[in-house]
Length: 201
Image 1 (cartoon, rainbow, N blue to C red):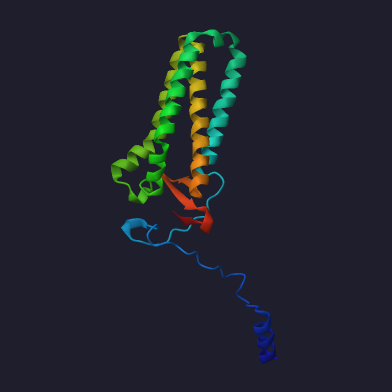
Image 2: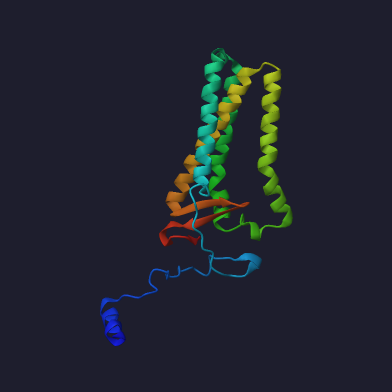
């Protein structure tokens, strides 16, 4: 009975371990770096939230919703000069990012922002950057609220919205041009090659 079953399986190409087996991904040795400076494959299966452009999208939508709510609450603030000044600052920051994003994203693709490749000081700075920026933003908002400067709050929010949407659009454009997806997780930012389904660039 067994020789007959083996013959049938050989003709049909069926393998009892087929469901548990998975072909290994091909990794370009020049582009993969493992922890400790040793070369090796890095396989990732990024979730929706780990994709950098999705994080930027949620941030941009959140700031846009907050700005729209503020416009409804303070309709008369749109005529003040301070609001347009804040918006102009946001435009300037967006233009600055537009001029520098290629160099910054090239560094990401080169692996400079992988946590294992950073020095201890770089890891600390990267870990504290978001909390410090959040505290500063909250402090500025509180100062404007206590001073009754609602036009400046709207200007600041409009500027941040413009920066976030510009950042999001340029990230999507860069990913499509380079056929890669940027991944942000656990203090690291790196790129994954979309053409090879999970191979880090």
